[in-house]
Image (cartoon, rainbow, N blue to C red; front, side, top):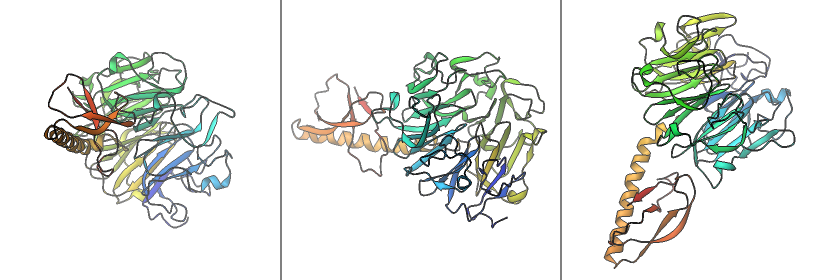
Length: 475
């Protein structure tokens, strides 16, 4: 084995495509440090697909490693299991990346400016474009069709088996890809190659700030901590109390979470985990036959249930779910695991303090609903329960501050207008009332007249103070 990674990154699980960064075919059954010779970039986040791994680097780039049958490594071609695919390479065209996601064999990335890119398997339009030619998107390509056109800004993305969910900066949900189980939440079961915004009754007035996608189902989390589920429900993975499939988001009864707001959810192939805000209590539901629900039995659970054993009283800060496995990071930096382990079912959470993790703390986990491998990144654990890539959740204070500064700028502009006899003050008027679109310059008269026409402005602030269109409506 080569020297250990200076990144403090380790892998365990299936390595059939080289996705664990061990090109010699090693399949680690316990956390094993990745080679520093191959993983030279500093890694801050990892996600996993069926036979692939994406690594998010500190400079805003993305490394891809694993199989490339569908172009899921974003290298501009599909060359199957070529040995070079087992070496992590930067994905061309991706920079300034804020978060990444991986499904079965398609991938997505979102920049800090809200641009979304997708690549890989596209047979159902899960890359946000109608399938053409060989049905695959071989290079990272900007998603700018349907509900994502007109420079709509994306803040969060999740990839399921063959479907994709994108959340805009103002909490709208945009879905595309396969929909045979109703996982897109569009109210039907037709596949959707063009990104479509969800407009169902259950989401009216609701701001969605996080989501997770399983094989054929979806979980959405609102800013006030409610959870909405849609899709296939053969094992109760929706958490709605039965095994009835639904094709539009349905709210899970908050009483199942002890009336506590939910901070984050994670979806496996047929099971779901959630953690609550503050207290970090862990709940699980769905397929129990593999032990991945951590409930101490192998029955399916149709509603969220508190996980037992060592996690009953622990404070959980991060969760990661793979095909038939669950991994939990607690606030002391330890990782606990449960589920299918080499045909041995571990139905009660067990401490994973062995191999490369022995005596070390973990700050991040990486896996995916279709993955059979997991990654760990060493370091101090995060302070609060949240999504691994909680772009929206972690910027609430910054948004609050920007809005206050913007309000002061607008009030000052109005004062200057009044002082100058109602002279025109040039601000920016937004085209789109949804708040996701780009802005165009337009004159507006700032006077003390107090007309009854709503005015929507975006102030001209330095770029380092704002990263997206911020909206204020003065009535």
